[in-house]
Amino acid sequence: MIDAARGLEPADVVFENASVFNPFTCLWDEGSLAIKNGHVLGIGDYSGKMVQDCTGQYIVPGLIDAHVHIESSLLTPTEYARLVALHGTTTVIADPHEIANVAGSTGMAYMLTAHERAAIDILYLLPSCVPATPADVGGAVLEADDLRRFNGDDGILGLGEMMNVPGVLAADPGIAAKLHLSCIRDGHAPGLTGKDLNAYILAGLQSDHECTTFAEAEEKLKKGMYIFIREGSTEQNIEELIPLVTPATVSRCCFATDDCHADLLMDAGHIDRCIRRAVAHGLSPELAIRMATLSPAERFGLSDRGALAPGRRADFCIVDDPETFVVRQVFRNGTEIKASSHVPQVPFPPSVHCSVPSREAISISGNGSARVIGLVPDQIVTTSLRYDCSAEDIPDLDRDILKVVVCNRYRDAPCGIGLAHGFAFREGSIACSISHDAHNIIAVGTSDDAILQAIHQVIRAQGAMVAVLGMETVILPLDCAGLMSTLPYPEVARRLKVLHDVARKMGGIENPFMYLSFLALTVIPSLRVTDRGVFDGESFRDVPLFLD
Image: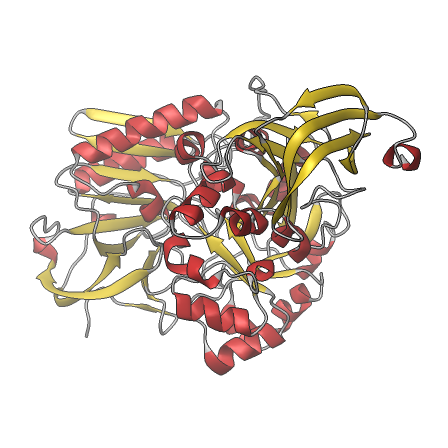
């Protein structure tokens, strides 16, 4: 390798006449990129056993997603990798806390096994909050000792997002034990500010992907946190946060997709989409590419990638224009990643163990001022609304107030009932077995009959996304832990489009399933609904549906 780097021996392959992005300077180096044994020899006047002419093209280091939940794509890890690789992604930093909340260590082991067979590098962070809070137990509880057995395994990089902010601030011993598992610790602190933010950072949390305002991101950046600017299916923060990125701050800023459905990934892209969005909102292509390459590599201590420098991995993609950033070819360890066929997936044990609730189980009573969850367009935060109404008024289509039902999927138990504003359905219902983070069954609809029918179909399928409109029922089975489908990604995307088409006929918002799936996540402000009922994220406690 040394002789080859000195030009005394030929490289395996040379990419001639290219403009190669240098993330250390945020400039383009002109010349020939030489590769041997899957690593970069350098840029210069090299000869190779194979030569590819790249005149007029641009070579960029492989793209890196700084924070993602693969399960949210609805694809298994190998199928997810097969899809995002075509968009220039060669590494993702994944937190498998979705499947861990359903199946604990068994779910973790499933994801790690897939790591070995994936078309890209899937590096995992240990899920720090299973459950998200002590009250939100799903199918498993993982303490520090449970996570410790995975430390040191191939593919484990650090500790995943610490969502239990109250536990951190209270110096909870169990939280402290988890923080001591790794020196790489991701944060999750929506809206945290001032001295409480100081304490959270002091406890060892290093990054945040939950910023929704410039002021929030700026404060966290100034206090030393890495800022992951997120652009998912419903968490779209690039437009608001991209002014934060300057030549002085870019080393502390990365892109993250967090939660993206397969149809968006297939049609619009992955981190390449983030680059295009950032450029469209005024960021230079060079700073956007820096955010997608060297910045996440340095944040996670991945000194073997993120730049096409001597000795680093030959992970890169070729594009025709940095501004439009359409990926033409992708290479991992110097070998081109090409479209491949679907690989049959290993079956996952059943994870839905409840019965369809009765009509009485999803009824509500009371009247007066009701707490109503307000959806926020393009965000997963909600607002806490108040409406004067009675149980008999629901659904109130004129004011867009619909019933939301959460059914414990792990055992037969009472259902939690809430009200939501913003779905805008005029008829029908939707339901799914994805409801972060406990992943109980959650449904919203314009009648109890439609809601119960949708829940029935989810249970019957052992996990699914379901839309019910009159006599029409559309189902996307999620046969892997009720979170992912074992179908090929084009078929998952096709069925998602059919679900969305039916939802549009209901008169509803775009991406209603993604909004629905986050309504039970108690670690995001402001109002939520769980299998216990309504939850106030500001006071961090269960509250009645109707105010006293």
